[in-house]
Image 1 (cartoon, rainbow, N blue to C red):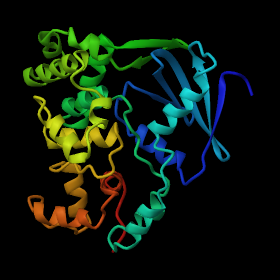
Image 2: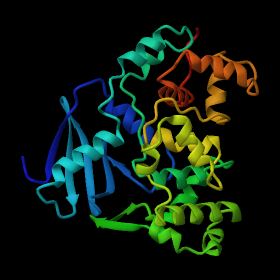
Image 3: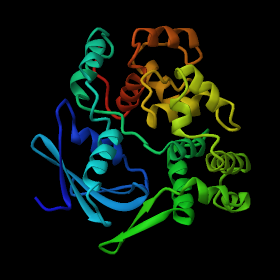
Image 4: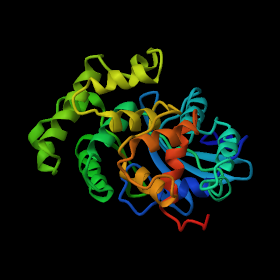
Length: 303
């Protein structure tokens, strides 16, 4: 096997097809491409840019470094990145046991078997994305993200195509609000994104700072002290970046719609019933939300 090809063993339940489904939902996501059942993604590994091609092999993922200059540490770092991004180290069997105890949700353990939370390893990117998506539809949110990334992000060219890397907080800390507004960001969202970039630049917010806090509640509280971050944004970022397993994005329209469709709630405003439902999914709330989102893309079985 060549120096630019890395084999990552899959030691637990994982569905590459479900992973591809999530990454290829007909949205204009500029952060990756799917070509011939292979994921092409530009990433920073130890602050160096690489283009990765990820495909499935029996019992493993094959990761090819298509662009970039690897060194002796790159292979291990790439494995760590992909493992964290695709949440490959988690045993899903306890979650499936919980699903099987729930009559409305038990089908998910079989139909979505191997679906894992596809993360956003960079906390700054996760926060920017969740702020971008506040109170607008996903199609428009992806358009805004593309405009932001194309103007402020870095890129790798390969086979006459451009692959993008999300802008650094240092770059966005120096952005002008009017430039973001020209991209159709609202004045408030432009203010929030630039403000958060400055907090990261000043060392006042980071993954390390959040992880040093004692529990989920403390992390939520710190994030919600930042202008522009409410409970939905905080929980989404914690779920996608820090892989918090008990993050519930309260008020999320997709989650509430799925709960309605499964007859778990009868009213989207019934917060008490939502909370009571998640009490039965303790420790797996984030995965439950992710599978509820997944369920919206397919016809539900009769239960």
